[in-house]
Length: 393
Picture 1 (cartoon, one colour):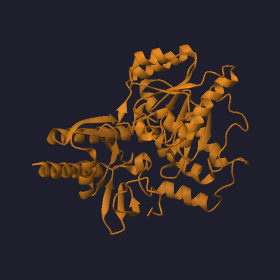
Picture 2 (spheres, helix red, strand yellow):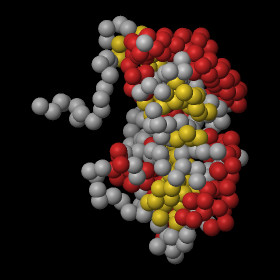
Picture 3 (tube, rainbow, N blue to C red):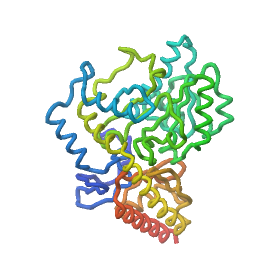
């Protein structure tokens, strides 16, 4: 008999009822150290007082009106994002998947309105994850996501990861855009080299191709810069944002240049809930915090501290771990044992991590995780690895 909740997840055998900072408490009173942050969503941890205040204040005033009317909180957040990024304009969504759908539509509408209706192909890269909608899975193209869901939306081609020769060969008169995550999250915490991103931007400029960056997971301070592409010194034409921008409240956005967004006129796209007063009030509070240079400097300091400890962990447990990956507080442990076994061993030590491809463990703590919690995380990961070493002996 099917469960009341559609069984599309293999859920852990416990549930949480409260959280504070980097800690979650289960229904039976156990406290878990959270290195998953809701899959990079709880950028400032659980029950962060400034976010709680922003949400409760707004909840007492106005929840929803729809985009038929002006929304002051939405306007303020859009202006802040435009001020702090490459973008000239912003559209708010409820999720990263919705942001991906708009990015795809925006790129194709751009070329249609320029008089090139056949310029529709979007190039993506193996290992990508852009969401679970039909358009997003077609862009990623992996068998795991697309099997059984055909026919797929046409017009996507996947290239080998960071393969410059393949990219040059694929660009042609039908290419509308290139879409990628500067750091692949679901794909195994794989960062595109800065040199590749610089070449990509140059090739897009030379051919007029739009560059779409998916910073749903690696954006909003996660890598130690506001957005990961800043490390390479480039800017996109269109960018997808979600997860951390809402600090736990469902919120996403598409940021774009005026040129890239030129085809999106009144009636060309919409969202009933997107950019509602509640979401934007929280998003505004998050964005004000994570755009502070002092905050980002602390993210980088914490990341260096955590990474140093993880490198020592790999050295101490070579039968369990192979290498540390990632940037900032978007980190991964490439495993030698099955990463699912490491997750389970972590549960026994009451620490939460997240699976990723290429047998990698994702570590996505709150960006403001205290140093003491980093030390405790390393202690518990060490205990989990020791447990696995003992079981394998």
